[in-house]
Amino acid sequence: MIQILIHKIKNLEKNIVKIMKYGFLVSLFIGCLSSFVLITYELNPISFDLYYSGLLLFKASLMVAVQFIICGFAFDTIKKNLA
Image (cartoon, rainbow, N blue to C red; front, side, top):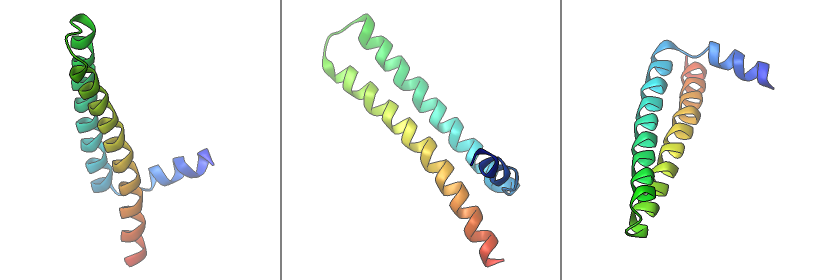
């Protein structure tokens, strides 16, 4: 199973890999922002709004990363089937 996944990653087109890398950078930025918000809440627990917004940002960063992976593989498969 892992060998199939590694083989598919190696056979992705360069443009799709580039878009996926930018998506991961966006996801990393959102994840760092969520960490900053959660650290701010930890240092000064004024309200739960900071906590929930930090968790929401963290969930969003994970969802963005997963969507870029899935959409990258799907778009590459569709593009290869049409060619």
